Length: 123
Ligand SMILES: [Cu+2]
Image (cartoon, rainbow, N blue to C red; front, side):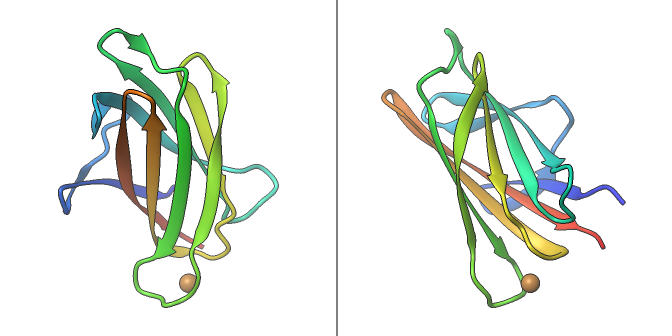
């Protein structure tokens, strides 16, 4: 079953429309998707395409944290890699199905932003 992915802005959930651009703060816009990782059951990759009004963002640093919303055990941390023009991926070694919140902090010399996603992973 496909993951259920929800965007959270200002504490309120909203639908993450496929291909839609999301304002992260700091003047950053992102197209976001969450992908399965071949060869694993629960690991997920957050893929971001980052831009500003003047073009693709090539100097971003990404750091993600995944926590389960209803279970009190440890978070998963990962940093991102640039995979192409304005494109970045963060692979999170998520280890069980359930309701995860994934926060991704995007830092650039011109400003920083954050993407919050709720990702429900089914068995
Ligand atoms: Cu858990």
